[in-house]
Length: 286
Image 1 (cartoon, one colour):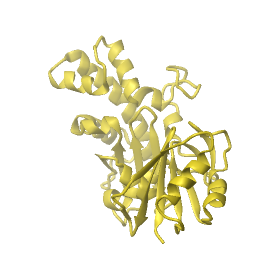
Image 2 (cartoon, one colour):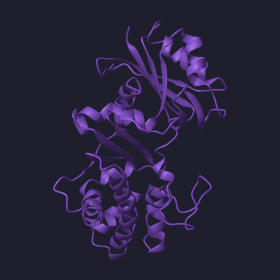
Image 3 (cartoon, helix red, strand yellow):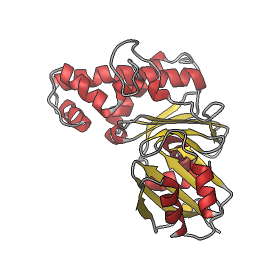
């Protein structure tokens, strides 16, 4: 019996069979309506009638103790997804995780190395994702809702964040956060990539924008290293596509500012190309 990995983002779900760490080339999709569990159950059954395990990744906050969705687009608050899906499919082994944890678990061995004790993934998209892997397992506090590093404070009382607070890491280092820096510096840009491209062409204002942006990104990454001293930190998402233009200045400031700067052992920082297949594979590892 194959396992089934599912990824739910808003009103869309994608799923595929996963066996021996490999995702089937046949990936199926479905729309999520008023009854998310029923829609996912039908999607799973279209792949396999009796899966060994169903692993689900969701863009939202998840209670890992019983697979409830605490908050996510398209779901009622406190939605018992694992329970409902188990009833609808007859599969007793159903796990639900936030997307960042599934993604990190899916790429852990290849990116961090099988022997890595700790590994952190940051995804720099509009919704900043964070997964903290310790001892081969995601750390999320007593209920799995922790590790929301996006909503830790890097500038108290300053920029408004979509979560309702101010000064959150996400408000500064997401693509829209970078575009706000660009506007403040008088740089015309429609996307985060436009800012990097302008800097590469020699635009001084764009370079100043990226320097200020890097101060906030470096602050957050340094905080993670000082807290967890991980073997490595992988940076994924939209902004990771900028490669060395993002990673080189980040690494330089982190090397200067981290508490254990004199230690011969250093946390590796690198960009990764996040993928749907890694999410599906990781979902069944949770």
